[in-house]
Image (cartoon, rainbow, N blue to C red; front, top):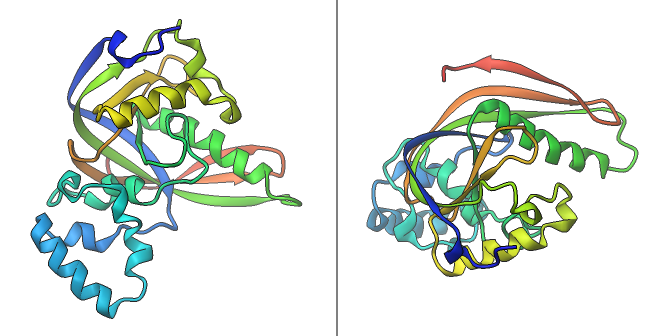
Length: 234
């Protein structure tokens, strides 16, 4: 198996549309969306830190991202930035939990399939849970990037479907993070013939627009239904 990012080809994506779902309980972070540049952010953040006791929780860990990487002024800046300041300590396919990635999918159907797997896994780990629902907010992104191309089925080790066996993928992710790679392009594990992206920075995101809402229904064994709740235009 290839073990070095330098051995892999790259693919340029220019103003690429992409999709993501997030839990609707997480609102946009107003501070990211309300300022236009790093200097204004510093001033507003300093003032709000004195008056808003929740600001640190809302913003997340700013030590995990350079302020120069935040795409201030774009539509949906907070949606692009929050995966890097609110990092899942349990990690993800390409991260051990010490840094964040912005995961995107080629279609909303792919985004649903990816999210469905992980949400179902979460529900199954809740002892005694017989029924539950969760509302997901659909987001449409547009980004540019020169991405390491993993779309080779022979790179089978990074495509292990078991989240407990992400070791090979995380090794590549650590390499990408340390070398400041722009991102990865790879095959979706949850949706056949689909593509996903993992971006190491929000800096090349042009927009992130809220689109539709989806209700995921858990019947005690699996997510049995995904219902479109509202349509705000794609």
